[in-house]
Structure formats: C-alpha cells, structure tokens
Length: 116
Image (cartoon, rainbow, N blue to C red; front, side, top):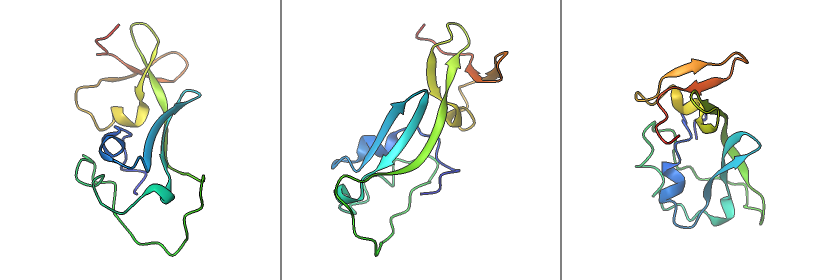
C-alpha cells in the first residue's frame, strides 16, 4: 500500500469480501485498517482503487489473530455550510468535484457538500 497515494475513498474496502480491509471513522479521522489474517490474497481490492495505491505482495510475517495494521489515515474535512465532518481531507486533493477551503482554525472544509 502506498499511503501517500491513498485518498481513503473506501473502494478497496467495499470490494473486499473477507473484510480484510475496513474503512473506519475514529475520533475525527478516517482510518483504513488491514487484518492480514482475513486476507486470502484474491486481489479484488486492487482494480477498484482509483489511485492505484494497492499492490499485492507476499509476506513472510505470519498473520496474528486480532491484530490489524493502519494502512492510511486522514482527518475529516468539515462542511463549509454546516461544519459537520464530511470526507477525508486526503480525498479533497484527488477528487475534482470537491473544492478545498480552510476555516479560521486552519482545517480543510468542503464547499460543495450537498447533503446539508
């Protein structure tokens, strides 16, 4: 996984049948977690990634039950209209339909958030 390329869009997690990849929202952040014990190496997560951030590799490290690795994370950007957390800040740089702005606290905001 190339963390700098990942926008945290969640496409890989949506296609991961065994749920080895999971996109989670934790304390104002979006986190992509990987549970190696659940990964069969099928590669279903690779094609849907718009940033081509995922590559399958073999590992010599045995999977430990219950342990997960954080592959990527980002703070949530807030809606410019209502201030609600909306999308990962990393996604703003890769998605052309989002406009990046900053509020008075220096946090990224989303200008064209249409659900509020």
